[in-house]
Length: 637
Image (tube, rainbow, N blue to C red; front, top):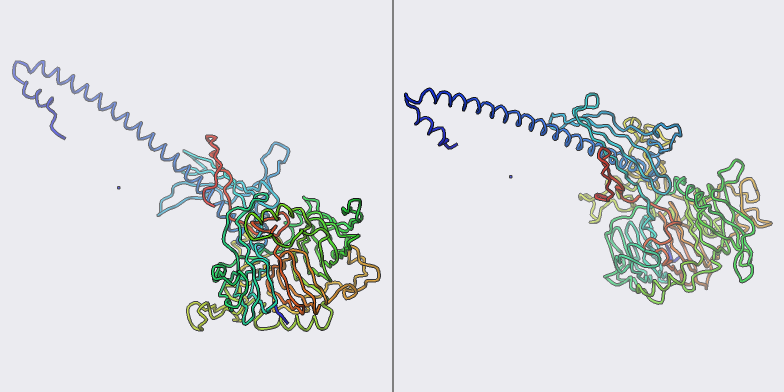
């Protein structure tokens, strides 16, 4: 962002002393009787011992069968993890492809399942303990995936079992709002605050270095919270401030509470960005929630009333339906948001919006001119950053207008067709400090090849950065044999999101340029390409765009670049919401650039509208099907 661990028996001894010629006959009888009784007792003891040994052997086999079943469940859990890891930015693609949905066939037969392994031997140190079989099926579809794992252990094997045990578990692959939305400004690159007149009223974070250089930007810290329950903020984390995956440059120059040492957090663990290369989970969400966008009118009492539907849950999913969407609202005829919608192509919008919703785009999102809420929060921030004041602000403003703009490609603000806009954005996108080519090494951050010590030739050097090779993992035949390759991919294809595939699309991307920011279909007058409410007389983007923007109300996200040039000299520019990008080229020619973090995002708020990432696996149930024992717990994840 630029400003421009046997003793002898006495009884036996006495008998021997009593042996005399007079008593030998009777003694013989007694001896025979004694020996007979002794033999009987010994035989009885031996029988008891043999029976007890058999019981022990059976108990051991039962324990082994139980252990084998447990081992099978853990094999299934490992398979679930692997399937997610092989497709990190499309986390359910491999899982859904391999494991069928548990649907009752309706004919009394068992629902289909995936056999992970059949009568597999468990061998340790050359000893075979038995075998196990694992079957799996999905039992829940939606934002999360629940996988039912049924494992049976056999001793010695399934063909001739002397003992067996069956265990069934349910493991959940949950998704949760990405923590990138804890910040008013987040970048998966270096963070540049090059401007004395940049004011961030909320925390800022970069996965790389955060750089204020010789400038004096102002950053006001916002305490962070781990969770929220209704309007109750929970689990305070820290006081907020400036966060960086590397060091903070020019920290002494930062003004505001972000300039305090206690609020400067360098060398933080990188936060992975969500990815929108696959919009199918969001299409499911939009459809299940019946998301829509309308053009409205102001009715009695000043409330916006839907008049004309401009978009249903998914734009571009029907035959003949345009994939691109234009939305233009005015104070008297605002754009009315109602839940999440997905647009498979590009989106252009400007003007006045109301309601609460989110727009997910498979292409670029263009904010052609100022974008404002009809009913914004009464104030841009709480009276103070105390928990009490923040919760009071949330109570007053939770239901106010909210818009999320989430681009699978780029976020473009202003008139990109303008020569000045094009010049400044291209200059900064192509600058060596702002590298975006997918040759950024193991840390996925450019300009870090020298490692944290800043010295070439030491062990922390990132030797893969800038080596001219796109280093990723590839699908193998072993993946195919297990059914772990998602639809649309083959053996030999790059595994999306691995190695240097930063944006997770499985394709190498070179340095971003202004050509990546252009509309896919520039003729806005073509109704076969563009849905929505294109204003009369508008044929091209420049007919409705401005290079003198001053206001954007939205929480914005892009997998790639966020670009803006505004030359509204003498005026102030204000973002209200949040800005998350892989990199950015924001150049402002206004008196100030003000970023106001929407506190409704604290603690994971507004989660139903935000992009998500896979959270740690959860064991939701575990039961032994042989004895009916049922237990629900979360022991390991």
